Length: 253
Ligand code: CIR
Image (spheres, rainbow, N blue to C red):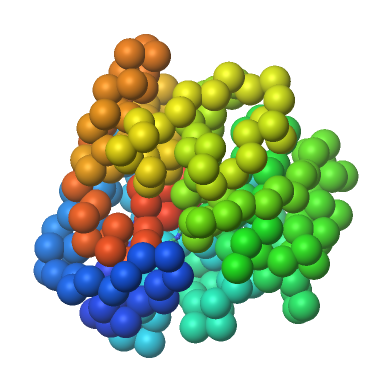
């Protein structure tokens, strides 16, 4: 597997924020934590391809939002936050030799953090970043490949994957306060611990789950379900409203 990551921008302190209050970010600590995150991905079997960043892109570490990668193609998004649209060319360049590229076009917007892919099912959150035109474009690109695309509402969080992620092909970890779970009929649901609302954002790499260290109760719950769980300290990118899935694009080589 390949994991595309991107450096922490020196301007991450000026990141976009929607649902969390601004708190001081220690940029050097953020960099060390990001390196540890990359080591964790490497130990799970990923080859890391880290892209450079610069001060013009405060949120560029969150590569998940600028592309959604499938076996057949990569969807290069049009992020909902205007400040983030300059992030896409470098990520598209990194993906070009790996996948056929398709693009979300105006007036569509779509953040990759809103796209939950499990098997041939694609759930796309209708959020402050992703609009119906973006969802419709994703559907028309993906349906010919046999994907079933559903737009779903969320509330109280930035992206769909803040509220729910897949831990295997039939199980999801979910915060039911942020997304109505009836759309996930047929999936087994594992609830986050009530004291850890942000814990539904879990990164699955093969058989391994990566959770933020800030959510030990949910991590233990997942271990009790039989998963191998690694934890990483993401305190600084969490202040920028990012979780563990946001900081990489993981794809089969
Ligand atoms: C933003 O607001 O765009 C960034 N500060 C955080 C993006 C986090 N990405 C994600 O949840 N996929």
